[in-house]
Structure formats: structure tokens, C-alpha cells
Image (cartoon, rainbow, N blue to C red; front, side):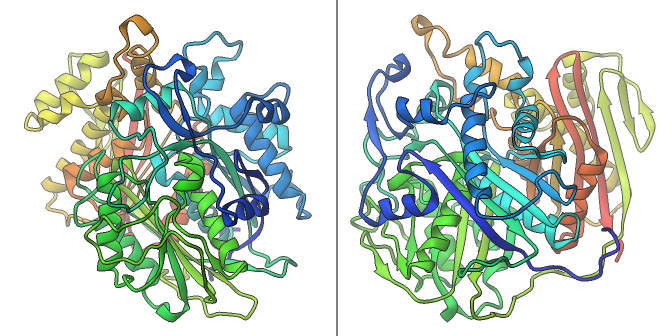
Length: 581
């Protein structure tokens, strides 16, 4: 499969959405078309002190979807994937199929509870359980890229197929709600206890939701009447702040520019925005849309129907955008009445007719992450606007590498002496090698580890007077996600008599935050991605890196393994690679 010379087209051949609003994508779409919303106000739910508005599965639905031997989260994923597979003839046990799971917190609701299998807390191992239930034999990849995870997962699946590494990708985005997630967003003052109002003058915050959404991708068009092709994809970091978007919408603007350049604007039906109904995100998106020259296009947001479904959002909203074009109807933005952002964009609450074959999906998230894709309905063949730098397999070289663990430190395979060990090793290393970035002490341990590894690599580049690349990508992998910080955050909410959800901890309960910290420090505005594996797998990591280098204009990348379990078990093995052709 490595001997490819040209990129392949990638098509959506099957799908499913499982949500509190309906079972199946068509059922969900029709519910939205009729104006229904699954949002409801909850008081004292999970014995939480503050009310919130969310879209949650009913106890009856939980009973219906429960699968023996699987967690609630895993059961939702398996149900959604199985229903999507009903429409296609695929051997899921084949080596030409990859399973990609998009999630932010997976089984985190089990944290602090007694369980016979501690491995359930690791998203990669949970993905492995899901694969076993489905009969998938290839190792899974978990995309944990904050709120952009769903679109990131579609992009990864598309890249792996486009570069001949697989023929099929099952992409499923899913998250469930629990006290851990809801209390965290409440600690950030981001939640509204009323139905959300995206882009509206009176918006007061987001609502959360749970769902599982599956998209099956293939290099074969399939036999369905509505054939959907993933055309162009992009990811960029703001390099601005780990929990607030760039005021100029820099990362989102770069993504939109990448996916619409070369596409006739008259073919674009609409832009589906993230539209969380938070003050700053909606404002940022409106600025980015206008900067990208899309201010005349209709813009919609779907959070008023489902809430923010986190890891499911990007997949769910992309599928519903496809169904909107299939039905020639742009879904209205539920909750919107009067424009409350400065960007000159066109939003309305009512459904409206459309007849163009393409749409643009944009999304943003913590860690400064942004993503966008464009997709087209190709009953009548449309040209594929390519933003790929080359159809030839790229070559690259490693310029610098660093290794940090309790066993010691090596830079370009030369040992760096330190008398400290464990967590003290990282503090000592910071004082000796950096010393001028006080925010270091606010970071979680995973971010400190990654930050220091990146600093040592950057120091080597400065010593060699090597060119700095502002569009450098950061692509990292681990096994434990952010579990160390998850446990610390849980301590702030587990005792109802001493309940103090910590916003400073919660923001670090996403592993991709470390990529944002590195991007901010070094002003990198390239792609930042974080992937979780069931175990360290160099071949799988190489597939992801190869697909990224092959399908983007990225000239250099910081990549490798970055994991922090505790003060006695951590490891960073990162390298800088540069394209040589």
C-alpha cells in the first residue's frame, strides 16, 4: 500500500446518528425539520447543586441500548456503528479497514467508582473493546482533540484512505454526559440553564448533549443515490490561548481559506458553524467567516436541537449538513432571533430552500484548535478542488529528537545530566533550561512534560540557526489521555460537602491542551492533533504521520509519544521532522 503515486477520492457510503432526538440520521433530520429539540432543564440531576440545560438519553433509551459486557458509552458507539453497517457490505475484519473513535472523555464517568477493569478508563482500551464487539481486527485510533475531535476524525479517516493505507474507515464520534463533564463546564461559567441561542444578541452560554454519530468512508462511491465526497480538509491552531479563541479568528480563518480556495462560491450552499452560543466563540466564528469572504453565504448552527455533543458534534453536524442538501433545505438556527456578533454573517431561525451541491463545516475547541472541511454531493460529477501539495509520497528527515523519563534525559541521543527524578526532574529541568515562562507552574503535568520536550527541541534549532516554521504541525500520541489530571479534578467534586469544581484543573482534562501550550509558546499556527492508542504502536503512529505529511502543505512537524501516568511513570519521546521533497 505504500507504493502509491496519486491521491484517491473519499466518499461517505453509510451513516447513523443515535441521539435523544432520534434513532437514525433520517429520523434526527426529520425531528429537526419539524422544529423539535431534545434540550431540557435539569435540577438536582446527579445531585448537582446548579441547574443546567442539556440533551440526555432517557432511562428507557439507556435500557434499550445497553449491551452486556460494555459500558454505557461503548454501547452507544456499538449501536450506532452496527446500524450504519446495515446499509453496506463490508468485511469489518479485513486489514483494509480502520476504526477511528472521536471522543473527549469516553468512560470518564466511571472514574472514582469501583470497576473490575481499570483499563476502561483509558480511551484506547475502550476503543479496543468496541472493536472486539464489532469484529474489527485492526488497531483503533482515538482522536481526542477537544471539541474539534469529530471533524478531526473525519479528516484522519479521509487522509488514511486518500493515501492508500486503508480502503474503509469507520468514524464514530461519541460522548456521554455525567457530573464530571457538566460540573467542569459550569466551573468555566460556560453553561446556560436555558436553551441556547447561537449567535443571538441574548445568548448566555452553551448546552451540553450526548450522542453517537457514525460515518463510514470508502474509496469506492457505493450504490446510493446521494453520493457524498469529502473534498478538502484543514486544521490550524490559534496559538493564542488554551481556553479562549483568537479575537481575529486566526485559526478558523486559515482553515476556511484552505477549504474554500478554488471552489466556486456559487456552489457553496451554506457554512455550518460550531455555534456554541458562548460569547467569544460565536463572535470569533463570525469574524473568521467574514474574513474568509463567506459573509454572503447562509450560516447555521445546530446546537439548539442537540446541545454541544462534544466528540460527536463534528460527525453529527457534518452528516446533518449532508442530509440538508439531500433534502434541499437549510435547517434554521434554533434559538436565534437577533444577530449579536460583529461579523457580517447571514443567520436566520427558519428553514430555507437551497439547491447548491456543497457546504463547509467549521469547528473550534480548547487548546486553540480549529478545523474545517468541505464536502460535495456528486450525483453530477464535480471537479475536486485539490489543496494537496503533491500526489507523490513525501520523504522526510528527523532533525532533532529528545527523550525525557524517570530514566533520564537525552537530546539528539546525548545524555543531559540531572540529579533530580520524578516530578522534581521536570521542575529542575524548567529552572535550568527555561526559567522565563511562569505559566509553566499553572500547567498540568502532561503539559509540563510536553512543554519541556518542545523547549529542548527548539533550543537545538536555535543553536543550529535553523529556520523556524510558523505553520509547523504538532502531532502527538499517548495511552493515558489526561487521566492524571482527571483524577485531580475529580477530587474537587466528589465530596458534596466540600464541592469546588476547579476551572484551572478542568481545562487540562483534555490531552490536546499540551499541543496548544506548545503552539502558544512557539507561535505555531499549523495543525495540532492528539491521538490515543491502546498501546504504543510505531506502525500506526507512522501511518498517521505519513498521511498528514502527504495531504497537507506542512513542511515540518513535531511528533512522537507523550504520556504522563504519575511522578514515577512518564515518558516523552519527541522529534522534529522536515520534508525533504
